[in-house]
Length: 89
Image (cartoon, rainbow, N blue to C red; front, side):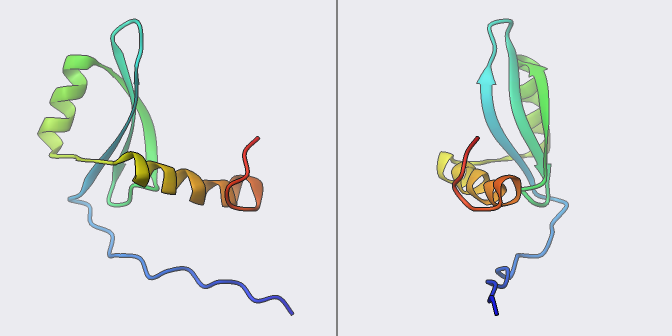
């Protein structure tokens, strides 16, 4: 018999919390970033010109993910994508 680790208790989903994970500024001046509402692990990838990105973040009062938080999310996603944590293509 195999035992599986139960998921950790997650904080309540809060639609008032907006998260941004900065990815890069492209040569054409566009900013590539991930945006999430309520849970930084459920994000969409967006791209805006720099000034629009800055306004977008300011108007939403975003929480910027740290490098460590982003790495934790990537590690967790690898479990789903590759079947084990920490595995890459």
